Length: 98
Image (cartoon, rainbow, N blue to C red):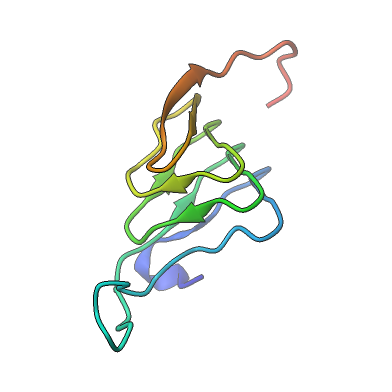
């Protein structure tokens, strides 16, 4: 992660297995680098096998569900799933521990 560009992973954020942070232009035959930040904010979770595209922020407490394709910012405390990722539900907490 390039901390100078503002991207990063927040406190208590979770990146599950095989969750690539995709920073290359798949439309370019040379797969050129896309210089846009990717951020996973505090308490957010990127599920297994989820592709996160350039310029995307998984906002605080949000979930990018397993197997999804996050091409747009995932708003705080929302659960997004699918290809492309869409709102599935809002995240509710049982305990105040975040």
